[in-house]
Length: 417
Image 1 (cartoon, rainbow, N blue to C red):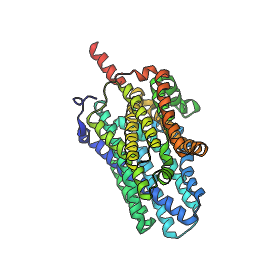
Image 2: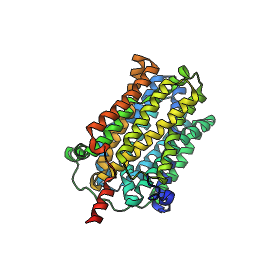
Image 3: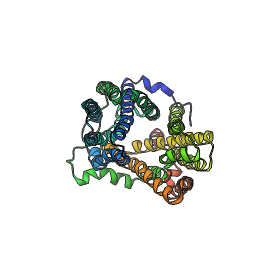
Image 4: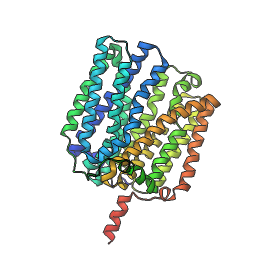
């Protein structure tokens, strides 16, 4: 890492980035609060574990169906406006949940319908929000912007559920009312954010244009290797899905202990991303990326090996930090390598890989734990992550041996000529 090339928090002097960052933070806190309230409310109304599963399905199914189209939309329309419209849709969902609560209805099908709308908005928001950052900040500040955006996101992911849980003491209406107010502010802040003109794709929608992002990823070993490494590492190393059972059966901890375990990866990721804002990675980027995934795997092994709460918390903290390094490098590689006119569709493919790794990773961890037992499943997951790291370094040598990000190499070549 090069400290001399870092300006730390200097990117916050960029007015539009500050507005974007504030809007994203407030919106993330709001939806994280809302997710806590929805889960508690549905379970209180029905007492059904199956209904808790339907909460996730109602949000993920429309995301999976719409994400490729959403990527095309992000390349043919103003990305900042798309993000703002999606936030406005999330605001509508929060208002509808508030009205559902005031109505006194016990028909949770209405909640699932609202979550389908939310999942649809999320599908359009993810590729647009990933791609628009390149249109808001100049290239020389992009690394800092990614690190700060990631750190605030993880802080929001930590703070949102805690705030939602505290407010739920006063009932779900208190949570939905607060999330509504936060989303109003998020929409306003995104509205005053300005972005540079983007390269618009004028081709009509078709299967050819929808799959353009997938074809681009497949044709670029650097991008394909970076995205697929994260997919399989998280797929096999998704031990966080087993934390409730791990806290109860291994550490013999209660809900408070589980809360600490849930917080540790986010805290590690948040602090690591702040460090990356001040000391961005500029050399040996491939080694840093593979090293981050390796740390993720080793931390998973330590988690499976220990029965000590302090060691488990340290392992989860390191797991989050290692994952953050990998995510940081991957995000920069994908954005630097991708032409602006297809950045939305490539970001959509990236979103599919991220969503699949998280959802399927939880499923894989549960199945493996059922077959081999809880501790063995965690240990196997860590070992599989390390195996993937080694295999991918051989399959994608151009990625593992990469020294600088592509735009740095192009700038040096231009200066040399």
